[in-house]
Image 1 (spheres, rainbow, N blue to C red):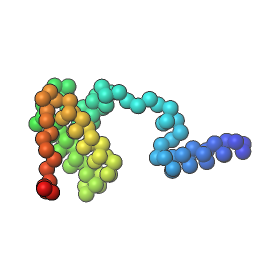
Image 2: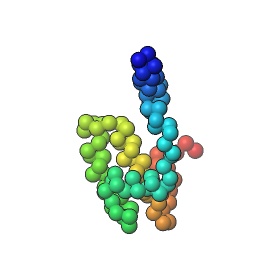
Image 3: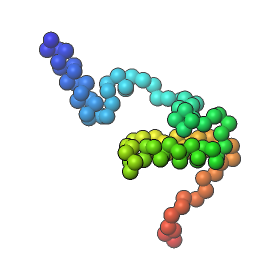
Amino acid sequence: MRYLIFGAVACVFCRWAFGKWPWDFLRPAPTRSQAVFRARKLLGVEAGAGREEIISAHRRLTTLVHPDKGGTNAAMQEANAARDLLLDELPGYDPGPPSGPSHD
């Protein structure tokens, strides 16, 4: 019984310290194609989706998961990462220079 309690406490400590359960460390990291599939599923777009469709789907999703609308920061970050990944997968896509103030 003592070992069972110790194991449960160790699992909870691992979750608290690292943000993951111990068994999550045993899973291999997803491949790029798996990540793209998951991003398409999250945004609800087909494999042949273009730039405008991806951006439109991202906007629809962010209206639901934005922290100001009751969502979480993690969900917003996941939506942004999905958008960025799918845009990077488009042929000939160049994000261009970063927007913002220039410090020349």
